[in-house]
Amino acid sequence: MSLDKNLDLFWWVAAESHELQNKPLARKILDKDIVLFRGEDGHPVALKDQCIHRGAALSSGTIQKGQLTCPYHGWRYNQSGDVTWIPSEGRAPKGRRCQREYQAIEQDGFVYVRFSQKKTNAQPFPMPHYKDKGYSSIRLQNLFEAELLNCVENFIDIPHTTFVHPNIFRNESGCETKTKITKRTGHVHIEYFNENSDFGWFSWFLNPKKIPVVHTDEYFGPNITTVNYYVEKGHFIITSQSVPIDEDHTLVYTDLTYNYGIWNYFCRPIVRSQSQKVIDQDVIILKNQHQTLKRNPMRFQNSDCDLIHLAVDQTYHELVDPKNAPTNEEKVTECSFWI
Image (cartoon, rainbow, N blue to C red; front, side, top):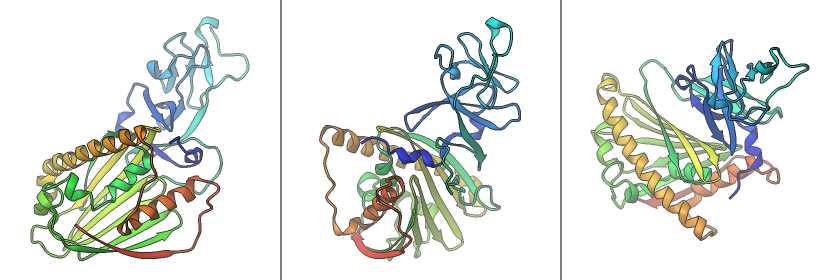
């Protein structure tokens, strides 16, 4: 499956803010090679990662006073992509010479880039409760051998958890869980009812008293999911931003954000390690799925409890396929499944 062209319209996480130091940073997003660095004003800069002179990768160069120097012949680029110095000529170029610059902004500890120059209402996603009082966050990066949409669907898929994450994240109970799925333009909201309170190893953290849990999932097209658990005064959020590197690989930035009062500090290392175990298991099963689909392409067959996947799939394609214009009509459906 090739990458959809309209993905260029959206903002994509290119790096965490702390990764932009005193060296250029190479990234690949939507099959495009880019180089990131901080310009003279300290703001992030994103250029095509190729010198216009002889084609060397600019990310292998150096940064001097907010300008990027090519490692091959020393051509120097400013934060607008303009060549400001050609050493072999001992001067700036005659006339303007420049490399392609992409839009780049910084928000919530992320550097975002956007490839299209077309004006839209698209904005970087505001990370829930980022640095809010009482909340702690853990930020992870994981590379998946999987397509964007399969990652997105996995992150808000409950039925797989008892098989892929037994004992760690959820235990099989045979209980019926009902869902209410609300689909709007670019957005799917899922609310769960009568969900089993046993979350495997995570029960000690999410729900030690085994009381009723409020659980909602959301999909913000084309690439973001949030999972919310509310237990008494506690709140745990998993926010995943799936960034396609190419048609076969997706880099996922995951924020684990939680508010459990005085326990925030003490449970941090355990939440990080156990959450990483869950993600590692998803990396394995999605690689399994992806490699199998590459060898044997197929059309998925859905059951009655796959309405969440169908809503996400439809929402995604409305956003990225110009043939499927988004509808402003709100659509509510319900389904049940057993876990």
